[in-house]
Structures are given as structure tokens and as C-alpha cells.
Image (tube, rainbow, N blue to C red; front, side, top):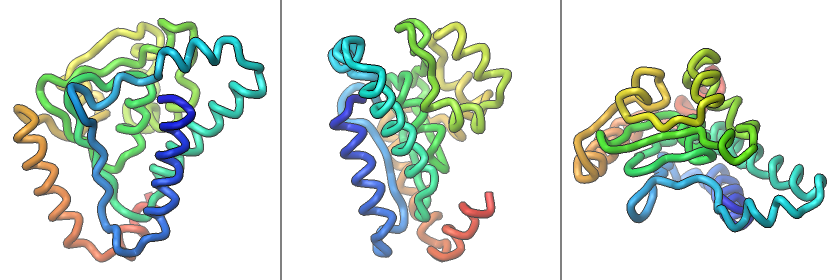
Length: 189
């Protein structure tokens, strides 16, 4: 994540929210990982930025995640490879999350001298305060089984081919629901 990625995602969610033709949003990574989290070069530059500049970036990330969570369409995160730091916030903000057996997760902000402030509302809602406390404080990596145990993800599949197939199955189920009902259910929850 960096300013460009956060801005692009925020603009995407805004376009999607207004597009009645979009019924399901599928979020997946390209390449070997779902997302490694923060852009390290960006984070180094942020170390020299003013407090106001860093606060603006933090607020933009928080708003982007809130916008994802509040989309009237159903959202589905398909996770493979590494899912680190801010990327776990995306997974927690999505309505449904499925990961491969080989997926690994971490709330690694503490190891960079940061707090996971922007992702914490979504992660705590997904995994509970007790699990968040442990993994936010330690920054340790955990596997898909642990992510499922603490409810960061809903399902585990064998590999990326199975992930794509399961994603299509879930999207098909979501398309059977009426758009107004899906939006209403999300507001209800």
C-alpha cells in the first residue's frame, strides 16, 4: 500500500458503489501474493513527512477500508500467498474471505514501529479483541488454519485453482440474491 494504491482503491469503490450493474466485488492479488502490505519505500518516505501528511495518509487508508466494508454489493476476498499488514484489513473489511492452504498472514506493523490503527476496526470486528491483541502485539506470522480459527477467513481451499473455482461458486451464490436485499442485509449487520 502507498498513496497511489489507496487512492486508486478508494476511487474504485466509489465507482462500484454507484454502478447498479456491479453485483459482486471480487478482490484478489496478482502474482505470488495477495499483498505484502505497505510499500516499504513509501513507508521510508513517510518517516520524513510531516505529522499532517502522515495523518492524511492514515485517514485516506481508513476511509478506503470503510468504503470497502460499506459497499452495497457483496465483497469476496480470495487470498493466496502472503497477506500482510494493511492487506489483512482488506480481508477483514470484505464480506467473505477464502484462502489457500499455503496462505500466510501477519499484522506486522509493530515490527516497523507502527500501530495497525487503520485496519484495527475491521480486524477486531472479524477476529475479536483477544486474537487481535495477541497478533497485533507479536507481529507473528500465522497460517490459513489459524486465520480460519479466529475467523479472519471463512474457508480454506487446497490451491490457487481451487481458490478460483470456489470464488466462482460463491459469486454465483451471491448473484442469486436480490441486490436490494444484499444492500439491506449489509446495512442491518
